[in-house]
Length: 306
Ligand SMILES: [Cu+2]
View (cartoon, rainbow, N blue to C red):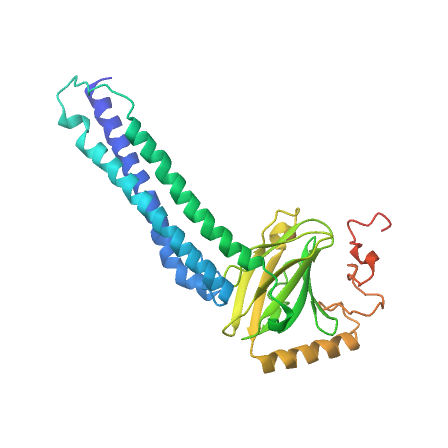
């Protein structure tokens, strides 16, 4: 390699190194800048907003886990930078050969035990918190029971009085799960086909919807608003369409809304309305509304008789 080529390749590798160094910084800056905008839409790329007790406990858990994680990060980075800067080639004579040694029993024992202790600490608190998230609170404290049923690809919410709301495909924004603020809401979850996952990060941890098995989760939203979520189990080609919206309104608004929904289902409109009628009258839309009968699990694509 002549000296010109050497110079050019040295320069381009320096440029490459600078770009590689800049990339993570630019990414972090972008996420930080976009964070408030995204949070306003109910989607927070950093930490969820935590507007329910479960959400709040999960938020605290994130913070507690972040402490050892940040500690380890800064320790490792500091050691790495020290070695890179202190032992860089330019600081030594040409042909310098560093001392050759390996093995340090004390160090190796320390860096085996320390991470194990940290992981036990994280595991203990995570497990305790997640157990709480799945605990079915006693009926005495539950204000409202809503059944959530998942299917490929959408959600059916059944409210007291058999009022059903269907959120099909990408219609989550139009058909949110409506809940009253300040009330303890218990969700009973199941699925009619494959395993789905219900997750609204601001409100609760993930809960799976398993066919033939009822899972429970609960939450209490402290303020009116709308929060987004997603199905968190890869459940098929339309998985990405299984978006979620939870809308919290004041108890009075909730009562009005429920009355409206009841009236709607009592007089089914001829148009294919998004809210399914609980009566067995034939639905004008092709999708079979899950009726309470066992045959309700029939889903157009899954039914061979169709
Ligand atoms: Cu799903």
